[in-house]
Amino acid sequence: MKICWFNENRLGVVAGDQVCDVTTALNILPAVRYPAPFGDMLVAHLDAIRLEIERLQEFAVRYPIEDVSFLSPVANPSKIIGVPVNYPSHVQEAKDNLDVFKHYEGGVEDQGLFLKANSSLVGSGQGVRLRFPERQTHHEIELGVVIGKSANCVSEADALLYIAGYAIALDMTVRGKEDRSLRKSVDSYSVLGPWLTTADEIASPQTLDLCLSVNGTLRQQSNTRNMLMGIARQIAWASTFYTLLPGDIIMTGTCEGVGRVLEGDVMDASIDGLGSMSVKVLMS
Image 1 (cartoon, rainbow, N blue to C red):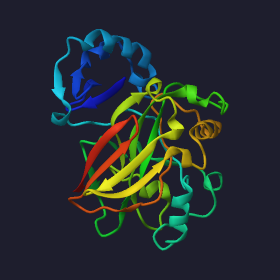
Image 2: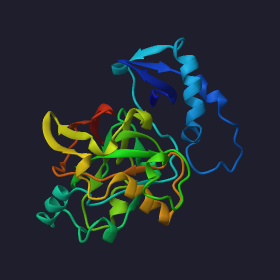
Image 3: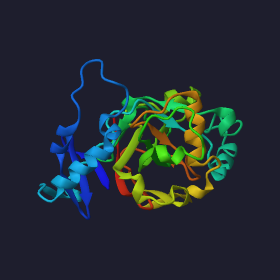
Image 4: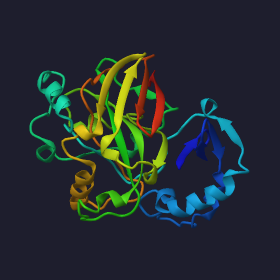
């Protein structure tokens, strides 16, 4: 199933080239009182939501995909986790350009995971807004993994069982000397979309082609099999440091071809089985 948020916070399910409005499926979610629990409530109750969506879909109002604006398919993650230097070709790219790519010493486990501010999260229809036009902002296409249930010190063998689904992720980055987490946490610098493809639709997440073009020119192209640290290991290792909660997003690393974007550019990103999305670059 392909689940999305669109337009004015409407809940949708993608059926072919249409989006079905199934917002009333949210009525089955339990009422919450302050303080609300950490994590995304829809993802935490995904199985029940899916059953309700199936019941409502036949009678839902439908919109052509090209007529809707997609928001992030995860509304309330407790954290967005980034995995650095996770493709060998990007590692070499960074080593060859240390004046631009700073803090690139050691592998993933040497550098550690990093966190991006939740406030940086947007959907493909909202676009990326450049905050520092005098500095370089780079695109980084990544497979986005969405956690489906609490994971604390899980084994690598069981790790994939904790995944709710997948989406295309853009880990946008301002280059500079500051800590990586700060430069990647600018408003709109975490793009997720266009929808959440549930885990049952992706038989082998470690063999997916991914690519990104800017204004029609191919810049990044690889396959998730080239990751230095695989998805299962990422989840297991992350869960030894902190509990992963429903809706948490792991951006699993980028490949070579990282490059600058400017106001007016259009980034087209696609990953096998997850669809494609066009993201505009705007001025903040």
